[in-house]
Image 1 (cartoon, one colour):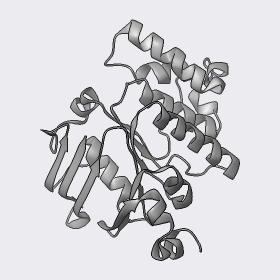
Image 2 (image 1 turned 180 degrees about the horizontal axis):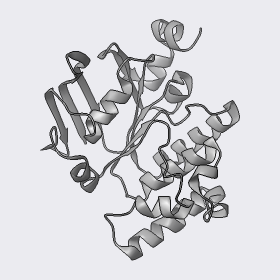
Image 3 (image 1 turned 120 degrees about the vertical axis):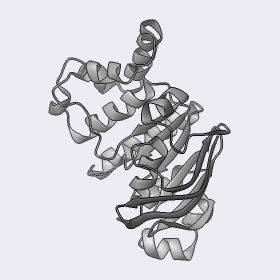
Image 4 (image 1 turned 90 degrees about the horizontal axis):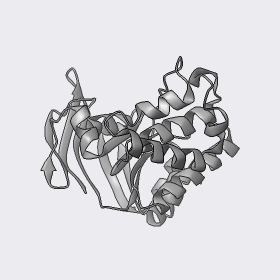
Length: 233
């Protein structure tokens, strides 16, 4: 579904991505792990079109989208849950969710909304509350629900566990597993390498803008280099 070859991106003259090669097949959950500053968020932002690519190519279902505008990528089915949730604080929970479906028809969006409320019952309870009054865990549910409202073919999840208490991290990853079980294709970035690798079919390790290791989630979780650097073992 997603083919990334030789992808580069710069902040001014500083290279952030240095020739990234990544593949995501339909129905897979692929994780990307690495330290702060490795380029994980930059890669997701480049895939969603928010950060410009300066070299290489990105193909989605065989179509070159390397320089496509972000809204075109959303139309094709590439949807990102951004780092830090980025909910619209002055709007209600339901308005935030409906904004996720701005490219879709009313009846289809209404049916998806009910599925979101079934998956995240807490959002149904808070549907009339302002998004800015939600807890961090609730905001993460809202950000994920907003993305699913767009009916993504490829869901880019950026640091869903950031800033959450351990019990909430478990809850968020339970939702990630449920999305995968529904057949969604997911590219997941998270500093919690243990949790990310535990749900991943395949995974990549990113260091200073380069992929240095690749394998199944289980293989990387058992890799002594990964254990020492990211799992605290």
